[in-house]
Length: 399
Image (cartoon, rainbow, N blue to C red; front, side, top):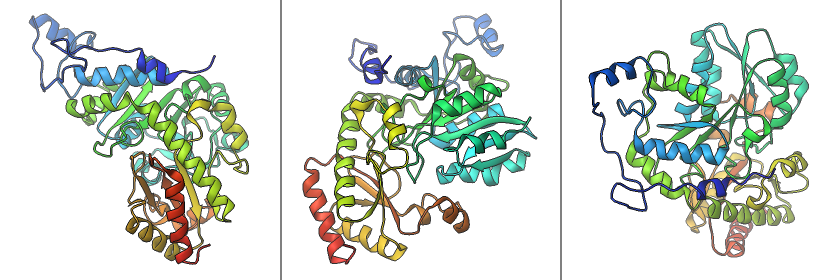
């Protein structure tokens, strides 16, 4: 059955305290109990229908969580103060000392640094493999493997993970499959492909206005309850709570996500085709020569396109920096990290968002110093945008 995530969002209605079309914002850090008995039961773990303390949950967060769970077709969800908080809390909830993780080698630099440099302090080891090759995953599995971690569309190389195939491997060995879906909200529904836990950096496409840092974990009710457990939950004990005011803001932005994703994809696809025509080495899953084009075609919700991210490789960091500076001067967008903003954002990930990865490892995975990552904006006239970028490239003798 075809996934309809935007319809799932549309079908949810929340009313404000006085009948407002937006739910009321919960501006309290703590909540009252009608009896002491209820308070005692809450501390014993019976939290259904009760709000204890905003570090645990709040009505505003609950509205957003319900909407994101509906979008990702999971039983439940929990929002966090950042995407990294969502990632790290999920991993630490599952793993203990002496456990093992298998991770894609091409992932966000912050996640890579956490697995490579931070978790070893707790004697948790990670094997980084090419998750597009199932045989490498199978070879890396040990009796202590608890997690397989990957991104649907990898950051920054835009490689596509075969979630369905990886899920079969994970289930056969009783391993949890955690999937970061930040680059492809609405476009891909990982839960339908067998993912156990889906993570987003809400900061990016979901929010869309680059004014909020937040994350979410979408999964089974059982796993979300574990994260929230008063005595043993990583979310509760590490304190990575999302602010209610920010939750209410994101919830309003979510209502236009389907419109934005379609436009991001349309614009990115056009630029990718034109860059390729100009002879620029271009990475975009919507191009037929992309190594995973056919795979992505099979798993994507086609009405949302192939996503708003693309890469171009112009050889050297010096050329990349010159082009990005010139594009910013010509109001194409901003030389900035992050993605999903209404204006185009561009950066050289090798020296920025993936700088945590050593030069030798970047080279091994195919991350060139001259690679520019574009988060393509919502430009009304993308042909005009292309002509300006092309002019910048000509002036710098790139084409």
